[in-house]
Length: 162
Image (tube, rainbow, N blue to C red; front, side, top):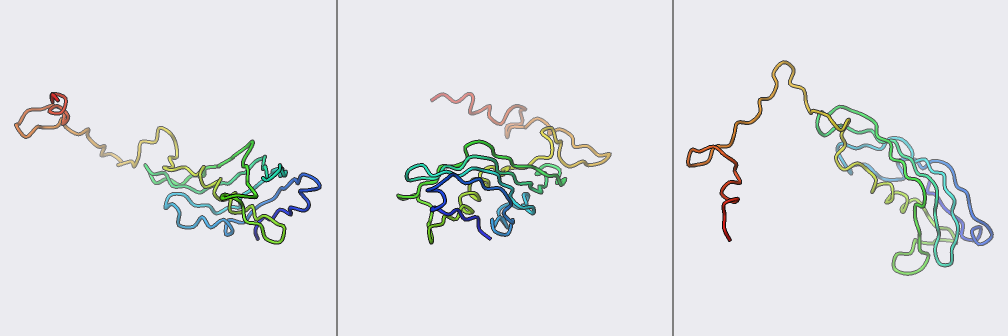
């Protein structure tokens, strides 16, 4: 069920909206193999009409089930957005669609929270990656140039004179 705001009510007074949007309404499936939204989006915001636009201020919160891109360990990540969330124009090229004097706020909320998804979720900042048990990876040996000498693969470029 979409989140609708009645424009006639907004002409009279600001609206306080609180509740949850089911994750099925947000259509997050298949966006990222390592990030899964399974819990509803919680919202608590004030909506007011300012001339030819709507100002949405408050809080959005979504708990994500993630898998670490380094060690594949599952963990949860909470996306929480606070403060001034959006200015939604009612006219012009970027106007939100209006049907029967109501604005569906679900698509702009979806886009706003989607931008806060972690691009490469990591369980901990210092995650060392997959554990190989007793066998630890050895550091790669120094690079050997085609001429047989050791050094950096960038050595030839460092010595390049333009």
